[in-house]
Length: 313
Image 1: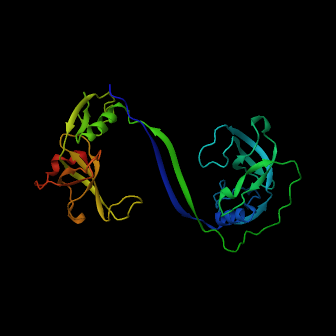
Image 2: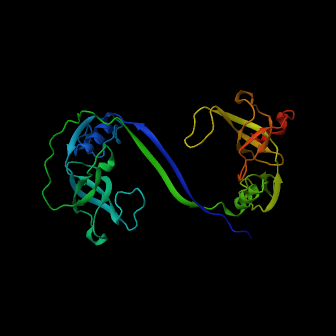
Image 3: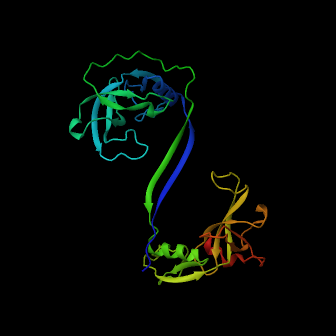
């Protein structure tokens, strides 16, 4: 059996989000070493603040300052910090109820080891040296034995408030396509497209999945499909993707390769974007050294009849 492929994979999507008045005041306060919560109609103080009461759903805007000290309500030890986490040495994730608050804030606690952490311990904020108006302006919490400082009664009004942030969502993991898709990828290296046929319903899945999702039985019979196919549905892309050297607008389509029981994705080229249509017959275009088709182009054949691909929409 050929070796099953595996490779590190990173899924990352940094996006910009705007802040409402409550979140804007909270993050701007952190930049200025002030911790703000929000007071509900029944007198509870929520930290971090939210714009709507989670119990009554009423809008809340009454900002109130709380102390930068608090009490650990629960914790878990992180023995192997990962990239982007608050500390590079082992630390505790803690929920801290700050003095003056009725809810707890999640952050990191810098401690020498798990034996130094316990529920009920007193801690205080350690501020980052450079602050920009983000939760990372709190570098971490640290143990504290002194009296809690008295909040200054800040109103939440700031000059130059933070109005938006860039939130980077990222997932790092090792991906293995498994036996079936490894064979599919290896075949693509030879400019062939291979699927697998279900022994029950006889549908050919491309890319193969190793099992039929309809019948629930394993698939192993390999079937070469294509290389030509039919456009079943498509969309016109008008927003240029980062690190993708393709001029917009362009067309991305579902393509049912001849002999396949499932349509796959592919870009359509060699034809004006506004001339692409359902039923268009296409063929793959390969570039030198590529492991998959760069795009699909029209073959010049007559369009496929709708009845031949309607089940693949």
